[in-house]
Amino acid sequence: MIIVSDPAPTVNTMRFLHTSDWHLGRSFHGTDLLQQQRAAMDRVVEAAVEHKVDAVLIPGDVYDRALPGTDVVALLNDTLERLVKAHVKVVITSGNHDSAVRLGFGGSLMAAAGVHLRTDVAALTDPVVFSEPGQDVLVYGIPYLDPGLTAQALGVDRSAGHPGATAAATARIREHAQEYARAHLDKQVRTVVLAHLFAAGGAETDSERPLVVGQLGQVPVSVFQGFDYTALGHLHGAQAPTETVRYSGSPLPYSFSEAEQDKAGLVVDLEPGQPAKVTSIAWPPPRALARLSGRIEDLLANDEFAHAEDAWCQITLTDPERPATPMERLKQRFPYALELLFQPEGREHDTRTYRQRVRRDEDPATVTLGFVDHVRERRASDSEEALIRTVVAQASTTEVSA
Image (cartoon, rainbow, N blue to C red; front, side):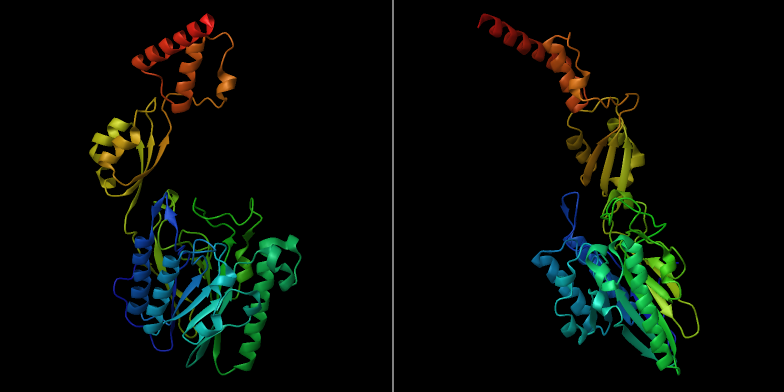
């Protein structure tokens, strides 16, 4: 469902905007994205204001790297400042791309302004409390849990990995929430959890940094059982392992594997006595992504590819031989072509190295021509072959004369 014009939440309803994996400072195939990310941050602020949310929930990977550039830090500062001025609170946890220490710097001071940073295991049982008549909503933040760094603090063995660390963290949160509920019998107590991890069964893209090798880092969603809503970060596609455990995905695509994804923010309503209601806000990227495949002449002339003329393009050429200067030619029609792949039709891919392919009885000119074909995946033209044979012959004559 897409929100077009959403009214204010009903009385006593807590409303949150779940967005994640901003990766501020990231580039896309060498293209700077700061302008597009600035537009994405505008959307976040506008959505928070338009839909009258109580808080924005950001479960990790705010930055793309541990040491972000000054212009990137300025963009985050501006975004948070605009949300604070709009009287919207913010809850942020650190992801595997963030430096937890740097992101969490000044957290106690920022909390006074309504920006709550949860980047340390020690703050697992320090929820941000949102109160309305009839219910309190406790928002807990689980930072990215590297088992090697957090196992001891969580009281688990490092071999327990991400599943064990997350289970220990959620057990602490569950116990704290139960104690809070016993102390506030006059209200319904709801729990919201932010976490940055790979939930078992989630769909990956090419743009996420693997947490561990293989599937050892996948966390079963059962560890979040009993919470009213779990806002996950890490996977860049919006998806719902369960009705109450969801990824918002990234606000922008960060790889061509995300070309078919619908980017979105999630509005989460918690009404007393009712399950969480989740509504999606569509956030189309400022520039579309397109994955094209075909022979170069068809790509340059066929009207079926016209939709991609203003898109960032990944182009796979299927010509039997690699055309000359393909990227230069393709950019005449697709100026935003960023990645060129080659999968020739009707030509078997030889996985042997060139040394393995060379026969000892071949003459030097044939060996050289084979090398040209191997390197650029296109046979030498008649004029190129004539030149190569002439040069090889002259070299051979010179060697004999010497």
